[in-house]
Length: 366
Image (cartoon, rainbow, N blue to C red; front, side):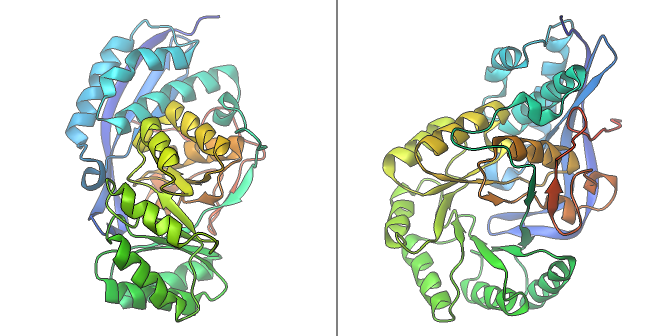
């Protein structure tokens, strides 16, 4: 049975943040994302979101809006019964703008899953060697800031029930050390993830970890310690930490299947952070499969995404079942209705045991 598209549109939607989301390379002061809606002749709509992080990927909101508006005009009267085939036909139009590709894919897959009466995750299969995992918890991020801000945030989120903290570092290394120590002091039984966002070189990162060792602190995962092109630096850190139990994870270095293949072939890391906004959704499946075949651990992350993209990623995680670390926490930094996911509790726990058709989040585009 065919599924014909009769309408598509893109629009910018903004929302305030409750605190600036600061990392080593820049910050978000508000959510300003491009949303995409497609509607079929049966009256069902699907929704997608492009979370643009110019300070990380170089993409812009204007570029993303223009690419999605162009795609919207070309989608009219197209059949999307096979969404992957349709996505492949449009893929080249999103070269250099993977956030727009993610929104395009998300909207089509949301529409198709709604039309079939199945949850968004029902369009995927468990990763090789894994089974679906409908319940899991996200970490919570402690953004770059003062020591006092880190202490306040740690107390707040520990009080909400979070047990894993992802601490942004890489801006002021001495202050970073004090912030990590503070979080561990406030939440002593918590797991720690360090995300440097390319803020160190290999020697500096290893020195920082030795300083933490002196305080009996060993993070469970170290994310993107060096610039994305520094494969030698990543590999050196991975070798040095071999046997420690700490995961060295590529984020900015792996934005495509080709980059993931390079990371695997070089033995540069033992973990990869997958994000829809870096590689799109269908390519994220291929990256996950590659990692599972090569015994590379997986993290699932996000840019500054609202409940729409975060919930889509949660469906993805639940079905594939292969993600050891979940970093889907950005809704906790957003004020207003875009912060509300139907499957996410205040302590960061997701429960997708009884999901509704589609992603489960609807929008009203201007």
